[in-house]
Image 1 (cartoon, one colour):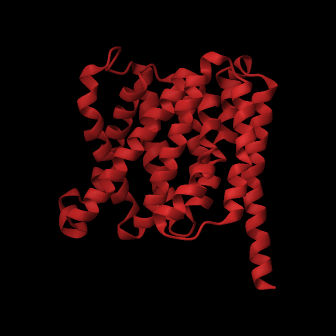
Image 2 (cartoon, one colour):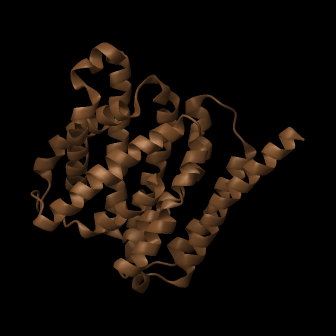
Length: 280
């Protein structure tokens, strides 16, 4: 359910007529406000302690930067390009998760992550050169989400998922606020932007983050990121019909997308094979 709803985030980001940073600021602010009734904010310091709050606040800065770069990639290219860049998260996760959560590297993860590289090359080859900056920003966004998810996996047992989300996104709001005066363009959302922002904040952020953090208690960060990589399947499908992205993309883009998705589903097969072998 969370992954399906995340498929709409790129579509909404493309539809909202705000800069990437302003869009994310409204998103994290509205999400934080939507959680106030559920988290007992006045008890956070007493229940979690200063150290845990600072850790989750630092993760909130990372997730805010991830969203700014994600929507930046969409604005610089299009929704399909921004989404498929996110499918490279498993490549970065196969490298950064063992370092962060202190577990051994797994060759199966590294090989499946490396399988994504030809897909990235085909995607770059399959778009107009003017979209290349969008791809670079999108890949940075994927690296940031791999780091964020790995740290979240390490600390997710320390608190309730809704409280973690509230601290992270409140910190993200505070982090982005000083940059707002330096941005040009529109700050106050138009009426339709308000509608899209509320869907993005409440349904596609509050609800999905709660589901994802609960899932992290049972999954590795790499497996969770591979599951999230299904987001481009839904997102590109929606963008194809709703945003006419297909007019800007060549067959090479879709071939690269196919290779990346093979890696996503390949991991599930390898994991099942290893489990059967361990039980044999």
